[in-house]
Image 1: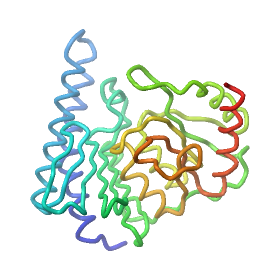
Image 2: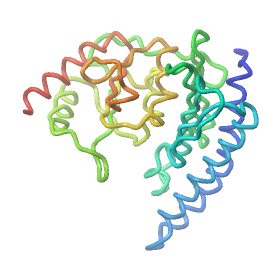
Image 3: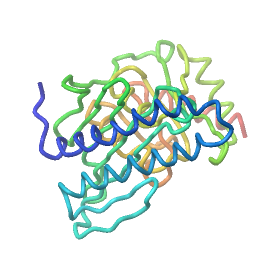
Length: 268
């Protein structure tokens, strides 16, 4: 079993603690589906409670670190070189509809680079974690990306444009193109888990546009430490700023990027 560093232990324990409330609230959400009002407000409350638990726990262990939070925004700290980037409930729409696919995501940015990450799926009790130079793991098992070399054998994940998020005009063409060249495209509704699944070899690639830093912070380091490759969809390296992400097992990165570029050109 890999020995977790004190840093990963702190992150994991915070995720476990926040997850208890989410699992309890998820059971309540399932009962709220018969109500015309209530579920959205309830989920918002669950989001905030989980975030408050995470902040409290992480601050107790690392009191000087800064925070970037989905719900609470920026919290400055004395140690400006270390910043927690947190999504307390990635997959909120799934949670709202009683779909059991969501996660807690905690990333640590050190000197403006992603250094460590934890993504916890509480319903499956799967903790994906990584620290720069140490490797990536799921619970006690080491993670490695898939070894598939042919696009025709690949399963690719994506995040489709939806209400409230900026659309990408060529997305439909991209989806058609990738679907026609692979074994399938999946849309599960949690970018954090999509990246973790690429790291675990369950998916061979993933792309999405206009994500927020907390959606991808932990997943970037987990994927890299598992041997994968992540860039912007156009090949750039400013994913945390643009929110445009293309992730893969490395071998299929250029073929997938070329398919997306070809589709984007034909869709203009």
